[in-house]
Structures are given as structure tokens and as C-alpha cells.
Length: 290
Image 1 (tube, rainbow, N blue to C red):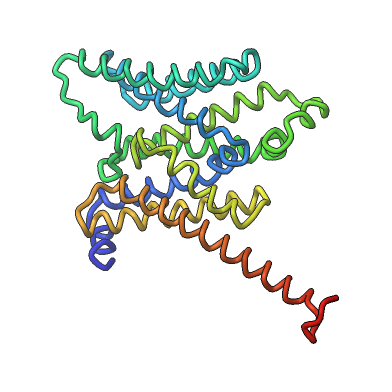
Image 2 (cartoon, one colour):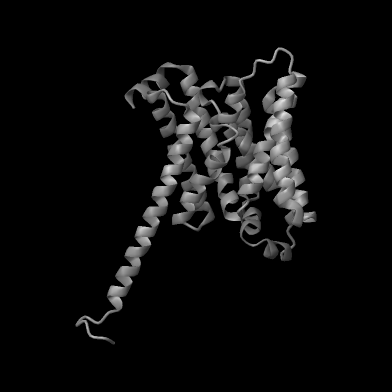
């Protein structure tokens, strides 16, 4: 750990990596909570894998790949939002199609790019150590947009996350709010791709929130806990990866996965102890049957 801290103090690329990890944790904690509560992980995966198509087209056109990622992610979010409202019975099929076609389009356009020298693996598996200052500025703007919109629409998102029908009865624009939430998920996906890559983005989006959801069912507390856990997994995984010379994105996700398994086991043990204690307290003190 001392070697990692020394590198953070010494090298600007490590400082950028830590800052990017903090930004990713904020977005993951806030938006991942909605994904877990509303159970839309599959939709989030469809949005995430469409991003590669946007990146591929952007590279082919000579545009910043992050711009292509943002456009593709937002486009997929709006499309899936309308599909959910207008043709819910076909939702799974369309998500699967976006998932596969988005990646295929990205690979095709990257292969067609003149003088192609893009490391596709960095998009698929992330490279937090390669976050530059311009990319960091984009991540800051995306994070601020997410925080602002979650703050403004917190109560409305709360209603559509837990009881969409009740929100409709109260006269809320459910379709607009749902699509807006998917757009925030899209922006979060773009942020997380720079940290853990396209393949593993759903893990970091959902696992911290899923762990937090095991121990609290209040949305605000769940967001705070998920943000903290995401920060621990990101910086802890980064430190381990740096010291052992391993891919940072993979180590971050493995850390989150192991923590989720431990949390599940700990929750089960805690519940079993509570049940045993309750059964013991209901038994007569002399051991006779009631």
C-alpha cells in the first residue's frame, strides 16, 4: 500500500486514475441504486454494449470516441425507453439486438479506420491508468450532470423506481422520467467504461448497490453506501493491481464480486442467528412445552 500511495503522490497519471475512480464511484453509487431497485440490469447492459458502435463510428469519422460513446448511449437509452412504453412484449428481443449489433458495428468501423491503431482491449476491459486530463474534464461534466439531475428529480425517480403505477396516478410524466433515468444510466456507463471497460461495466454499476441493498432499503442510505463501497472497490482494486502489476479493471470487478459473495454469506448468517435467538426466546424457561 505504501508503494501505491507513493506513486499517487509522485505521478500525475496515478492522480488522474484516483480522481477518475472517485468520479466513477459517485456515478455508480447514485445510478446503480436505481438500476438495482428497478431491476433493469439487462436494459443497462444493452445500453452499455451499444456504446462500442458509437466509439467505432467516431473513430472512423475522426471524432473523439467519448463523444461517439455518449451519443450512442443516449440514443440507445431513448430507444429502449420508448420500446418499454410502446412495445414492452418485444423489449428483450430489441435489447438483445442492440447488445449484439452495437458491438458488431463498433468492431467493423474500427477495422475500417484508416491507419487503425486503436487498442480494442482498452475499450473492452478498461484502462484507468490511461485517463488523461481532457478525458477527466469530460468525466467531471458528466458527473455534475448526473448529480444535478438526481438531486432535482430525486422524489420523482423514487416513485417510478418503487411504484410506477402510483406515480402515474399522481399525474407524473412517467414516460419522460423513465427515459431520463435511462439517459443517466447511459452517461454513467460512459464514465465506467474508462474505469473497468465495456465487458465489466455492469458489474461495477450494480454490485455496490446490490451489497448496499442487502442491509438497507432506504434509497438515500442505499445510494450513500453504494457510493462508499464503489470507492473502496475502485481504489482498493487499483492499489492491488498496481502492486501486483495486474489489469486494474479486472481486479476492481473481482474485488466487488468477492465482496458481494461475502455480503450474501454475512447476511444469511445474521438472519439465521436472529431466527435462532427468536426461537430461543419463545421457548419456556423450564424447557417444557407451552
